[in-house]
Length: 627
Ligand code: ADP
Ligand code: MG
Ligand code: ZN
Image 1 (cartoon, rainbow, N blue to C red):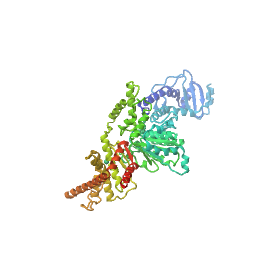
Image 2: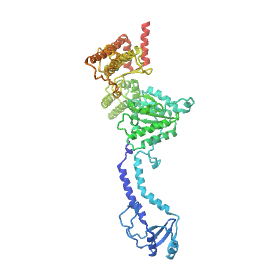
Image 3: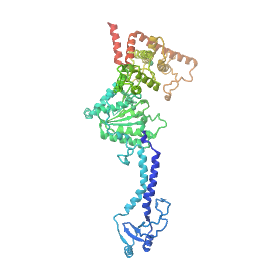
Image 4: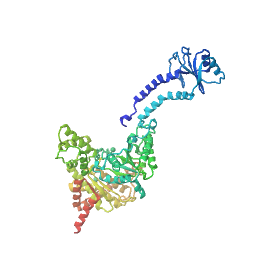
């Protein structure tokens, strides 16, 4: 919540003061001046010739007293049983009294006999009645207004009844000025978003072909990689209004307001179609209801409303809903179901080339010294996000400004990197030696997968450190869903997992800590092969694992009644399977060592290498062998 939206106790005090002032100076004089009296008192006043003039309305008689008339004491106005003031009514010279009109056929005669001015008035009792109800309520209305305005409802334009309207209305129809040219190194995400842009530009065309576009697009990636920026650029490129709302702004909200906001947001967006609704940090409301133990009901209401709205949209109505998160794994499954956020776009940390582009964008307006080499800066900043790089550019220009220098120099950048790194801690720039090791490790995984039949094809290999702490990764894409995995396939998988370590052993003659996660996974597979799948000859087709407990998924435990000897054999068999797999991987890499060097070299240069490029090296080797 931003500052202005916070509920302030001050408003409450102000409201109370306003209410008091109101009661004291406006309501009371009004109430006092018109004391309600019994008919008998009216007759008494009449007899005593106290009455100056009389107004007769449909239901009441309102009369004013003559100057100097004696007023019965202590006529305190009583509203709803509450005595508004303890002060005695002053002897007021010209007080007005009001009395319920009774059927009194002699009234007119009495009045004219007494020589009193009298007449009917157009203003009837209803006005009095209304004043009697509205005036005391006014302070309440004011309090209500002040409180709800602080709850984020936008009162200003829409009046007090518009509270709960979404914050997005403030940005209603906002045309963003962000374009893809302001974003560097987002190649793949950009390509995927192009389709959405085409749709937004011409929704009708897509309708004609009966093509259904994904209703919700989820941008997934580490913080600072430009997800928010990409969403804005999508709106900017398509030239459509951009409705922006942050998931976290829903939390801490009063009951019902979050849901009302979502409803309102969608209502407004529909009117403005084609347009984009962007829910940033969607995990704040879309957190899995399962894992969220102290589930916040307001968050749940908001999420439910969001789901309802998404379901209620006809396809191709021109509204594209985008979301962004850096924790897709905690999202409620209901959000990612077809018809909702059914398309995910990965926004990854930039490659060296991407980092150079980003640096270029963020130094465009800086007076750079001629010797500045942005590529060199990109080289030493693997694992840095776009936001980190923007930060570096900013720090460098600050440093130069502080020196009162004419140009930002390479030295400024060096210092800036140091600063940003110090601030980040986790991101130590990798030394060339480490990068080389990581490159061989990942190439090892990739090549073993290439040469082993039936392995999932390698989609992409990267040595850009991930935010989760891995120094690199090899991404394999399964070509089909696997319901049944054969023994040989399992063994191949293990070999692929050990390919990284095998490459390190082959090239550097020693392993490293980089393989620990691989070993964990391999050992788990081997353990299950032995204890669950009956794949060890020595132990036979017997189950040695404890009954599976799904909530402990992953951790296969040994049965408690396993004997010492059997336990030893299980361990030996697991070890044998793992060593076999490692030998297998080593053999493959030895045979294709030349390709390994080539892939690792390319990886060090480009940081990322895809399936086609690896395949090209493999094919080249084949050609050379056959010629
Ligand atoms: P996210 O939403 O993924 O956390 P943002 O879009 O909020 O990241 O990015 C924060 C800032 O970092 C942006 O305003 C921009 O200045 C910079 N930035 C991030 N990624 C990029 C990029 N790919 N190109 C240019 N600038 C970027
Ligand atoms: Mg963001
Ligand atoms: Zn590995």
